[in-house]
Image: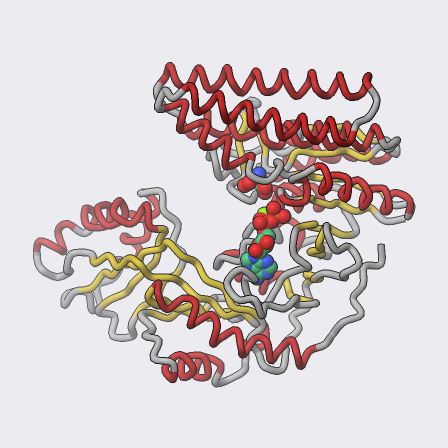
Length: 481
Ligand code: ADP
Ligand code: ASP
Ligand code: MG
């Protein structure tokens, strides 16, 4: 018997057919004698719709948020009608769904009176997606005779109060999972848990950031001491590139925690960037699998750094970023400019995605998401006001319509010439590189190119990664469970 934590993403629970498939997968694993904790996302499109309802409410557009409420109702009713045949179970879950949706509507009304959806209220509003899906999925499974219990993760995942991007308070979360969630599994019941949602110590709802259900599942896997974390999604595994960007993308049978960390941080949407954080220390293997193709072994993510012959395993890109450059004749040898710049950036609420400094020390550049670029420019210029007035430093330059491209592969460490190969390939194709940085884990290189070079650059570098998959052929990693 193994203890497994599994998470089903938005598409995996996005329709009656998909939910029926999820129930099959859960049933199969229970039949194998395993203990399961199941984490679910909102049905696909629902989180976006709820966010839209928040903006509509803030604008006082009652018709819009009421229509969104009705369409979310219809989506969940559709699942209930298709999958729950008998009246007692069907009526009870329908009533529960309608009750929650009344709550959503009331909250929208409150927002429209306030005229503003604060991050705190926005989190309360988007939480309805997972609260609805988990209840409907649990009801479907119960109707199929499975012993399940719907569970709200805000009872277990205790977070700070950074709304829309909260981080867990680890010790408190660990204790609550051990005392509250584990006994459910020990009693032979499968909890169906909301992904994405947490709560501050005083019980105010928070969310873990877009795509955060992966992170929820990893937190739960860690503190339940799971034997494996399985992320069920809508592709066969972690691929050599975003399949929507390049149709040649192939599934990687194995990647390390570090490699997936870099890939996710630099734009591979398949996993939330924080997913591996809770499971690394416990060395819990993670497997990414396809709900709609469960015969495929998927991708295993683990601690072993396995280099591949051609070094580059995958390529990824982030759009909608801007590059800011701090430069000036007076920078040379003046300590603290970079430190002050990065602190001002953090105070403006922006995270830095990539930093690059020329060895001349006369300039450095860094990258933030587009919507914050002007705020960061203003914050940094205000911090460096005196130096700018004395012409030691120029005003901060902002370059938009650029993208960050990252190539990832454990074999880069200690393999000379990888960067050379990457940049000569780009040079051959006349793709201009604006800045370069190597990841501190030495398993990635990131660089900036113009937005309209994205497809070409990914395509060319992807060819190198594809050679890797051809050569590697390390298969036979079928799930032991
Ligand atoms: P879920 O709803 O299951 O969490 P997501 O939509 O968040 O699924 O993530 C899965 C999607 O990530 C895939 O459909 C794919 O289009 C995209 N994706 C981007 N980069 C990669 C990659 N390198 N490997 C696999 N999928 C990727
Ligand atoms: N439902 C949330 C989102 O769409 C969380 C998740 O699906 O992981 O971002
Ligand atoms: Mg996701």
